[in-house]
Image: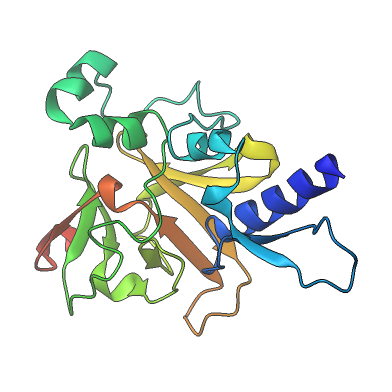
Length: 206
C-alpha cells in the first residue's frame, strides 16, 4: 500500500513538472470503509516527501554533454565571479527554478531578444514566445544554431535538455506534440534565470 501510494504521488508530481499546469494534489487512501469520501491532501503537507524538493536543486545528468566544448570556456570559478548563486545553480549546475516564480513567465513583449544570462548570446526572439500555462517561459522555436540538445535521463524519466550553444549553460527542456497552436510542434520550457531580455531585434539579426 505504501509503495502504491508513493508511486501515485511521484506520477502526479513528475507529470506536473515541465508540462501543462496540473494541481499538485493526491488522494490518500482512507482508513475508513470505502463508502467514506477520500481526503484530498496537498503534496507539500504529506510527511516524508521532503526529498521531492531536491528536484529544484539537483544536478541533471545528460548524455554526451561532458565531452562537449563551447566557444565560451570559462571555469566554474570564473562563472561564480559573474553569476549570482541562483544563476550558477541553474546555468552551471542544471538546477530548475520553481514554476510560476520566474521573471519572464508572464513577460510578452512585442519585440526583443532573450539572451543567455551567462554569456549574453542571443537565444530566442520575443515573437517565439507563447502562453503555455506550464509555469515557465515557453518558446516554440529558437534562433538558428542558438541551442544544443541532449538526452536527460535524470529523475527516472527521459527528456530533451537544451543548453546555450555558446557556453553550455543549462536553459531547460524541450517537449513535442502537446497540441499548442504554434508554427512548430515544440515547447522550449526555459528557466527565466537562464535568460536576460534585451529590447530591439538588432542582436538577433546579427
